[in-house]
Image 1 (cartoon, rainbow, N blue to C red):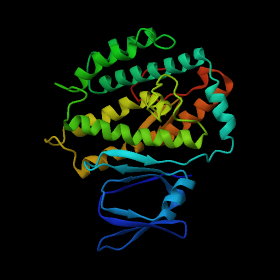
Image 2 (image 1 turned 180 degrees about the vertical axis):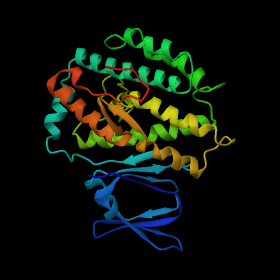
Image 3 (image 1 turned 120 degrees about the horizontal axis):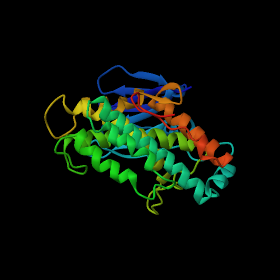
Image 4 (image 1 turned 90 degrees about the horizontal axis):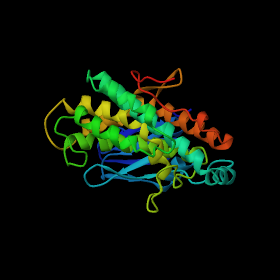
Length: 299
């Protein structure tokens, strides 16, 4: 079972040889890693070259390869294409989901997200955690009252002082990097399960190829938020440096609970998507397992 991630930030040439990813940094000894061990690779510099044979091997093995823009922010990713043995059957079941089932699935995702936001506030000793937690019971099927937005308005000012979500500051940079890494892991899990990421439960943008991923990431976001908050106090400055990016890439090694089982975020993305498949096939939203942070309250 794959378990390892690679964050490559120095100029290098990447090749494929004897079922290994071979990384040859400029002026340094080359390193190699079995492809079967790798879950994700972040290319954190544009000064890299890769062979087509390596790209093909990564795609066949379901490795999520994230490529950067000129500011080192994740700009795109390589995913496997039609690797699941029952791709067509899964796609038919996914597209045939009834609206009530989609609404109940969204309800579970939003409830878990708000409870995890409350857990983050509880972790930092904010006394608004219980008020946030009390909102969970008011999330109806499809979240018609938009409790997700109401919770967000209460949550962000307490997580970060003087914070605005879309400002170009380091805190937003940390958040965006962490979200991009978790998003890639979820996209990989969707592709491996035969799900079509473009067909979402709640997100339905015609220009978004990852609507389903953007649904499923919601309960994971507070985990990133907590991780970014701890990092944001380490030093001053507006821009992320390479140590910031490596730190946020390690979010996949953080712990969450799925039911009674403690898992890494990476393992939880795979287990959650597997449960989503069961929920779709069984037409039962109760089969969807959602991640909870250690201080979250849930059944």
